[in-house]
Image (cartoon, rainbow, N blue to C red; front, side, top):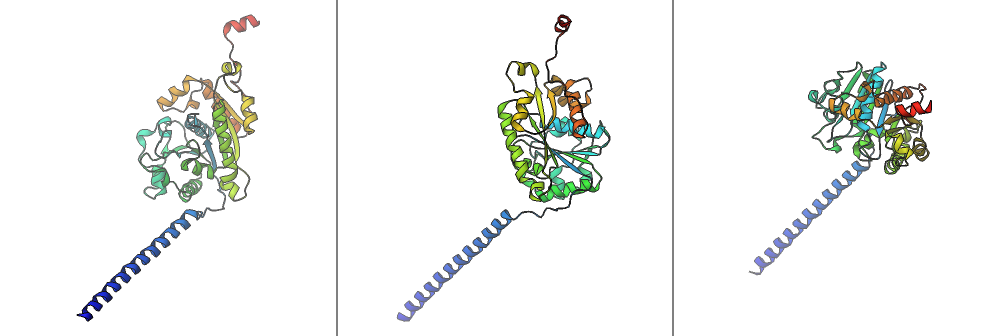
Amino acid sequence: MADQIVKKEDDAEKKVEEVLAANDSEKEEAKVEETKAEEKKEAKPAISKEPFKNLHVIVVTSGKGGVGKTTSSAAIATGLAQKGHKTAVLDFDVGLRNLDLIMGCERRVVYDFINVIQDEAKLNQALIKDRHVENLFVLPASQTKDKDALTLEGVEKVFRELDSMNFEYVVCDSPAGIETGALMALYFADEAIVTTNPEVSSVRDSDRIIGILNAKSRRSELEMEPVAAKLLLTRYVPSRVKRSEMLSVEDVQELLTIPLLGVIPESEDVLKASNSGNPIILNEASDAGKAYGDAVERLLGNEVPLRFVTEKKGIFAKIFKK
């Protein structure tokens, strides 16, 4: 009887030891997995130091939403293609795609940017040829995938392939602020078009974006020439500036201290163009279209006088002036 009791106690102790050993093993495995996850999180992706052969990466960015980034991306990409440059315009706003609407190709989307990154489609399957201008192609964002589907390696792969296809420019339509899509777009920029409205909150947020460009871009990490940031001032109304209801061009330049690319006047034509799927730059009769045309000329290094920054005078003002 005593032997049986001792045996039961030994068996119980053995079971306890087994349970404790199993728990220790599980804890060790969990610790290893946690360490691997941390290492993966901290590890920087292997981004090539090789410059692109042909491709020039332009990101259209802002700190605040609703300032006209997508309209500007569509207009600038279209303008570059009109000048004979093979151009792609990419939508980085994963989950909230709008670029395809403004470019008038929403019904032709079969594959998207994320499909290409995840090897679910080839780049030439996802690129949509523009119906307005030769040499212009659109790569839409995904509406169904999460923003985390964007990776630096994946974005670089797409850019390298565009480079091998002899594209000269890629215009990146960035989401507002500093979310994943915005940081991915900013990282590879050679040139940044900082889009802002002439109001204090918009300008302040844009200043933060300029700081990120200087600190977190591929160029800064690889100790290359810094990203060339340029200012695009949108929805400008000279009469409101005159009444001190809006910052002037000079005010904004003083606050941001980056070269001025262009001033786009407030215009109802912009909304009409967006709703019809025609980039505003195609409307040669519109002041906004002309202003985007001037901005493209400056982007290409040409000197163009600044227009649409003074109040238009009515017929009576002109008569009485005489």
